[in-house]
Length: 470
Image (tube, rainbow, N blue to C red; front, side):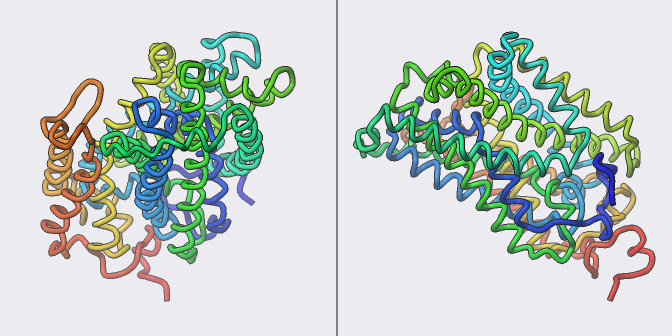
């Protein structure tokens, strides 16, 4: 039996180390989404102008659309046995993949920071040590858990899913004791711009999981059904996020003055005082611990993938693993401490701006994997700049750049608004453009490039030498 501490990093997980079932994806992603940052994401739809009725519908639509894209990435894990972002080398080249990877690393650090702000408030209240100490303590615990790795992450997901689900049921009842649901949903006036904002918020939430979702399905047995992996991932992520976001939207509609800017204390105050308050602070910290570990672990994988593309490195020592994770923790904690006082507006813009860079990557990765390569990658070549995929794929990088640029006229954030936003009534449809345009362009330039596609299924190094198994 393998030890508790994970030994694998960006290398292929051999068949004899595979374990578990696709149901594990449901429990992990349910636990990862039943947490306070998802609550605030739902609240933002109301804070920025939508009524609760259309906010909930828009959030659900975005969760379903973004969640479907995210779950298609998850289904790659059992088939390939690799972390998500290393497969980008098949599209962008062994070294060219560093372009989207650099942005992914920024994303992980940003999510680590935003999660640490909220969880740090909870830890500070629970320990009576204050926000700053709470952020630092929480970050250290996150780093240790990420260093232990895959098994602990899934265990925490199961525990957080159960504990947080019970807490959210209780909090939902308490919220509806204070506010009448019929009154909250009475206003049915439809506004397209704010409706699309709600869709974009939840879609960006789901799409942001895409660059690391396969990291947590890659240990599943190779024969695991892609359909089962897709549906269990989708259902866990959509159920958890919609549950949290619904609570956030209703809380913001019921008491905007009390909730906005005081999210943690408002939620705890709903539950009561004394032991109940302490328990809710613990629940907030536990929910954030799960997702922050995912962000730290994903950042570690992406950073190693970036460096190894230039160094030719295929494995990593435990000391090297700890060093990468410590670096991400320090950077994320620094951002959290610097930005903790302007969190809400910054987080909304951060989410929407991230979408600009990750929708083209998702479109290119999925079109290549499912429609062009048809799930066939030459795995040894993913580490060889002189191999089948080359060092840099100029066509893919050009399509990616065009995918980012074509979104800018449709993008609406606090610090930049594109020229086509006003004619659309202020609606932000950049993420739809960012999926459609690069998908079509990449198919057009890549579907005849058969030299990159191996004739057999994905092979590890031993299988590449011996040929595919019968």
